[in-house]
View 1 (tube, rainbow, N blue to C red):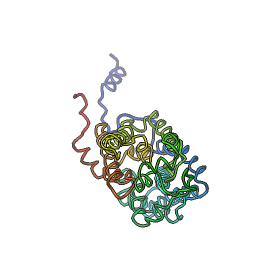
View 2: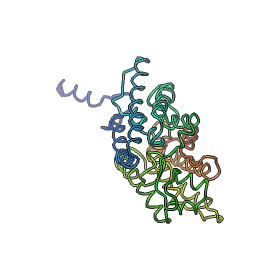
View 3: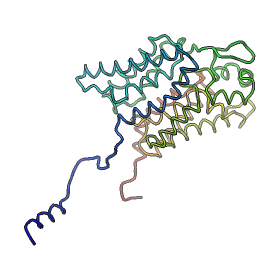
View 4: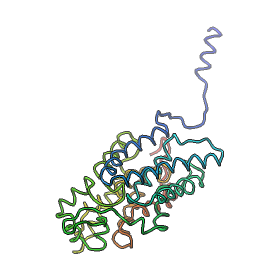
Length: 333
């Protein structure tokens, strides 16, 4: 055997030790974030069409201020400015979509400051925050300016000229019959909720377009289907069982599954990589818990909607879920 062949054999038999990750992918953080932003665009465009210029101003203020605060805080921290990765834009966009269309412009700006500077960078930046930054921003705005955060645009009503209440507000304050009368019939109500012709936050518009965006992310394998399915399904089952006024199993699950911010929360909030569990079992526990808390707040709480607070409460127990629900070791069942 020649010396050259001996060297080649030794090289082939060498054990190369390196740090993780050992499985490489073409999907970067930047690519994923911008894909999520793109998946939201159909719902965003429809919301601007439906709510008009006020919604566009709110979306623009929330998104731009998030980018500015991201760049400023990274400059102050002497970190590399990474506004091009899309994470700050996505945070500001999601925050704005959780706001009423015509809020004063300072509201989304302050919300973006809270989301980016306090909820995200005070904990170390991207990948270090324990709470969903957009929902932290919304929760802070809700307790600071409750009137502005619950002042809605007007929408046509069958029995009145206009109404400025959201469907969940009508259900909470006036009951299910008044809700049906507002839309004219149950089928008309379902159609309005599904297509997006109803009152609410900017992101509470078209269920159809939000689901299409979510399906794109599932197809790209950027999110796991179990999280949205189990959260929405939990809300449907529990509101069917306990949400009616005529005893058990007299509620309207379809209404509750399409009303409020449930769909955008299920597809775009509880699928966050950082603030939700790692394993599939953990994701299911998180989703069921968030769905149950949402129903608890809707049916028994003072607020008509509970998606924001349910996700933040489940963010608190994510480390506990990850501690007890761990992935199986390689090679073991």
